Image (cartoon, rainbow, N blue to C red):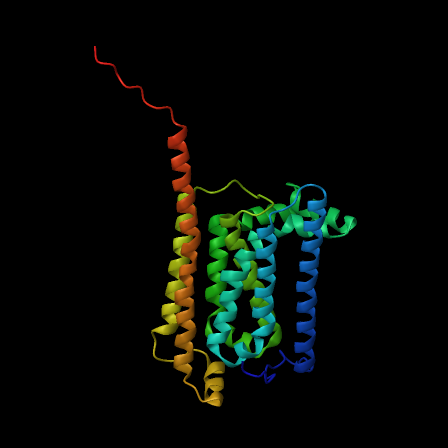
Amino acid sequence: MVPRRHARQPLGRERYNPLVLDLVLKIVGTLLLVALGVAYLRGWRRLAAAGHRPPRWRLALYTLALVTLALALLGLDAAAEARFSWHMIQHLLLVMVAAPLVLLGNPLPLVLWGLPRAVRGRLAAATLRPATSVRRALVTLSWLPVAGALYVITVWGWHLPAAYDAAAEHELVHVVEHAMLLGTALLFWWPVILPAPRLRPPSHPGLVIAYLVAATAQNTALGMALTVPDRPFYPHYVREAARLGISAVDDQALGGGFMWSMGHMYLLPILVILYALARQSERNQDDAPEASTPIDG
């Protein structure tokens, strides 16, 4: 782990201590993750006490999601500032691991049940009633074409050199970057995993598979764009590589290789979908009436 040097600079002409800002953001992030974990656990216990015990595997996956978020957002922050490859790992943990794990935990109903009654009622009204603006926005944003486009635009946009360097050098920009990546990743995975609330009917399995194949292709393309060229794209990491005595080109190629290889994780849900279709086909065949055999006269 590379020790943090607190080299990020404040934006514009604002005057604040980067050390203090970094500490405040880490405290806020830790408290938020703890609050989300406590609310989920309280909701799980309340539903279990009421006779509606959620599956334990959801609790396990949600816990793993929070651990992944803590690792990505808090544990790897210093290394991500110094090495492009570690910054890429940070992104991949957010969009490829934490986001689907959060949704597999089915967090909304459990977190709501873990909140005080008054807060739970207001949030439930905003997210569950069909006529609310929040619900309509979620329905639109989680539609396959919209969610996929937002996700791809966000991922590619933040990997442009100017945006990537700004995130590496300015703490607040880095927070915005992570919030956008995680937010659009949650929208991307929503129509695949279908957590509560069910915002729209499930898409045809063929469309979901095409959606995931397209995501794999764009991940591969971005990984190749970072790996194949024999020149570095990011001035911040060129300076950091010189300080560390490593090759900026090799570090960028390593990060691109992570993007390239981990993009194939999109194939895992495709295999799950194909397995479910095969099982459904077997059940349909078992339930079908046997054809009558003609009797020779």
